[in-house]
Image (cartoon, rainbow, N blue to C red):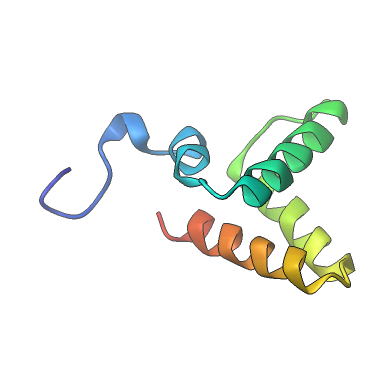
Length: 79
């Protein structure tokens, strides 16, 4: 770990974000979002993941899913 609090370069970016997710429900949710993006033949970017999560958050009525999405969004913005 670097002294300035930033992750090492190899952990930066989207792969570093994916490696932080440990809760099984969050892993499954992030996997479904990733598959949706790839099936649309779009590039898998932080922006694409973020937009998908926000769209899901807006559309969901499940409080548990909404809570997991909020945690994932916080992790995504907490670089």
